[in-house]
Length: 264
Image (cartoon, rainbow, N blue to C red):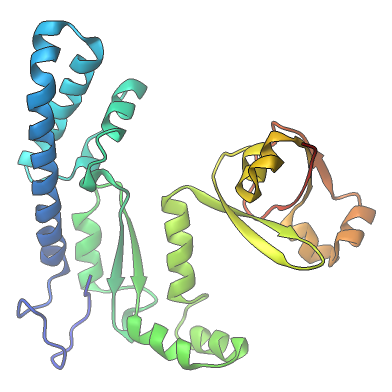
């Protein structure tokens, strides 16, 4: 969302209003979802009312709640369902406005650290959406991309009052929004990061690398990232007694350095 004023950059609608821009997109997506809901209601209404099908009745109730919200100009993600059955029925509809959303506010350089009035307006507009917001200056990111060394980039960020680049913060925000984390494998040939869903256990994470790893899982040797940084090598971590040996019920943590033992 454009959240900066600049007379030299013309807005297609003639003025800068990120809330209006957001609402235009929202309306288009909501209308599409409403069409989906109405078509689905036609298919299940008779069965739900006459046939006595409990699943159809459940889905019909979910559809009606979504329909009411969409007709009020609200996105599907604003509707909360209490029971797991309702939540699953809602998930199975795959509505566009039910998807998790991250609003990225593009500001000028001077607003990169703390935002501005436009950002505040967006934050107020989305307070009931269960969505996330991130402030980024595209111009600042372009300037950072032109710098060659890591040290130069860090100095630039410090001068701007920032700890890390907008691109890094964007990646982290998306991972958080989607409940994703990363574990690491390290061998003589390469070090690689693997993405997994938060809450997964060791065998599931092993399966990200190869299905045979999950099928024949025996155990996982785990080094915590902070321990590796502190001791400097796998051998030093072992010597300090900081390497964990975990079984099938171990819930993998973000940044874990994993070595899987398996046999197929």
